[in-house]
Image 1 (cartoon, helix red, strand yellow):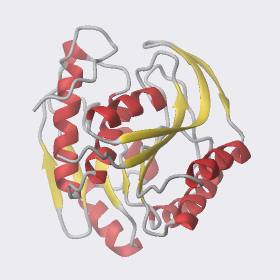
Image 2: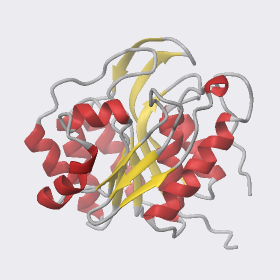
Image 3: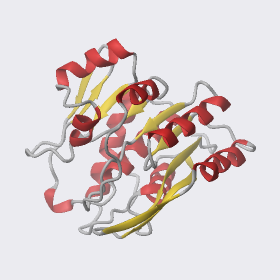
Image 4: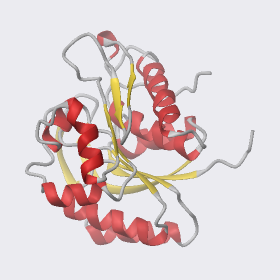
Length: 254
């Protein structure tokens, strides 16, 4: 096994509890054999169960963080989490692609905190579709997917990917109202279901962040998209089972 781990970036909010955002992403990257760099997009006032407020980092500061890292390091895989709005997202994506047009960007579209705080409303459909043509994967949960894609039926998502030439979509099933926790990967020509069950007694803060960053690290280590999603789902399950609190431990299991 190589001692040199691939470089990956998380562009996300700072959660003081370490359960979500940059701190969770960095822990996940390291546990999945990637070296994690962090760019702060917001400072949140929260713990593992309560979300009070946040302060957005201005776009210029985010871009300057990207610039200084790219002065020294190359990145082929980037995970984007909490971001102020679609205009900032567009600026960040374009800046990343200006360094390397083949950069694979994984966007975890956090629309609402688990504590109920709403970040984004009224996403511009045309601008959103344009950005989804520039990135590699989006990882909404079921409710976020309904909002982003305007209640598009699951069977129509692959048609949307083909018609609009947008990225692959992984719909996370952890918030499903039934007993399943199936994640569904929609690609241009295929739908793959990663089966799971609800772990109601082991709820964890930040599972969405952990899943998307685990996918990013696995992609950086050479796994294809299906393999990366499969490995990441297993990682999240181990994370959820690691203890009985809302803050999971990042322990890599074989």
